[in-house]
Image (tube, rainbow, N blue to C red):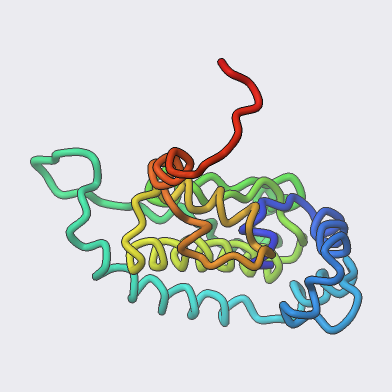
Length: 198
C-alpha cells in the first residue's frame, strides 16, 4: 500500500499490474511471490487500521519538532486552528439517511496535507478505507521527515514526484533528490556533444 501511495496508483488492479511489471525487482523489495488483487484486498480487510494510525502518530511526533519553526506561508495576527473533518460513524438503524458510500468516495485534504492523494479507495469496508488513509498519512509524513533531515531544497511536492518515478531504481536517495540547479551545474561541466545547436 505504501507503493500505491508513493506512485499514485488508483486501484488494486493498477497496483497489481505495476508490481507485476517490476517482477525482477520485487524480490529485492521483500516480495517472495506473485502479487494479486485478492491478496491486497485480503490484507486491507484483515490488517487492523489502528496499527497504521499509531505508526502515523509516531511519525507525526517525529515530524512536529522538525517543522516547528517553519513558516506556514501566511502572517497571522490570531491563532490558527485545524479542524478534524473525519466522518462520524452512525448507526444505520437509527439514522437510515446516513448510508456511507465508500466506493466513489474521494478524500481531499486541502490544508497541510495538500499532497496526500487518494482518488479512490482500494476497498469498501471501514477497515480498508481507514487503512488506506493512515498509510497515506504515514507516507506523507515520512517523506516530510526525510526531506527535512536531508536538508533538501526540493519542495515536498517535487520530492514526492521524484520518488514516484525512482522508487525501484538503484539510485542513492541524495542523487535522486538533487535540485534542478545542481543538475544544471553538473550538465554544464560535462564534455557532452550537442545534438542540436539551438
